[in-house]
Length: 119
Image 1 (spheres, rainbow, N blue to C red):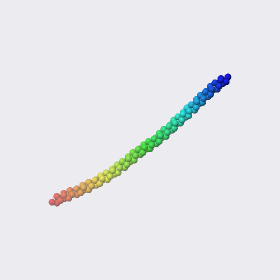
Image 2 (cartoon, rainbow, N blue to C red):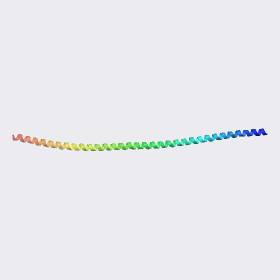
Image 3 (cartoon, one colour):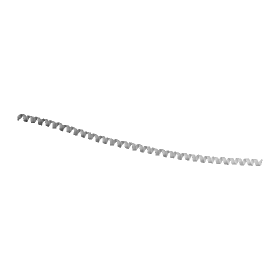
Image 4 (cartoon, one colour):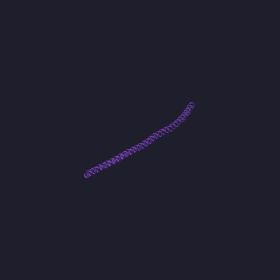
């Protein structure tokens, strides 16, 4: 009897150690799974934050580009308006000079005719 009890006790101790080892392995596996899941969540949040930052930067760059295009267009339009005004002023000056020269030429032609008629 004593031997049977000792054998049973040894078997129970072995089973207990096996169960403790299995329980510890399950705890380690659960902890590793929790750590893995936390890492996945952390990486997903980091990726979302990076996408948000990149989207903001790209939106700001696009806004800057569009704004720059409109500023350049307005500048070119104003420059063309100023250039057209300057050209119009030059055209007016040239037309006035042409009229003055034509009037002067007509006066000289009239003077030459009078001189020819008088001679």
